Image (cartoon, rainbow, N blue to C red; front, side, top):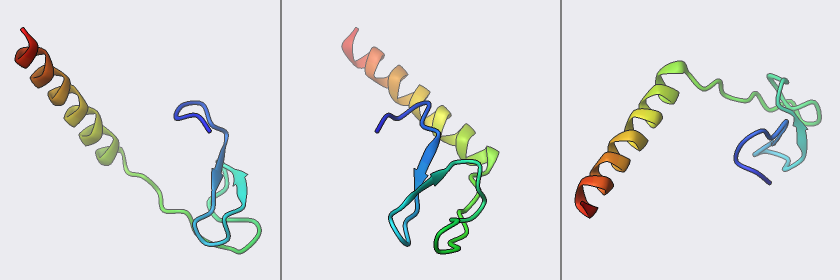
Length: 59
C-alpha cells in the first residue's frame, strides 16, 4: 500500500477495499468521513514547520 496515488481505500467497518470515489462502502454501507480542506492545509503547514525546525537544528 502506497501513501500517494492509491485509488482504493479500506473500510474501517468491514475491512474490504473499495474505490476511493465512493462516499460510502458498497459492501456494508459505512459512510466515509470527508476530509476538509482546512485539515489538509493544517497538516501541510505542520509538516513545513517541522522541516524548518529540523533544518535549523542541523545547521
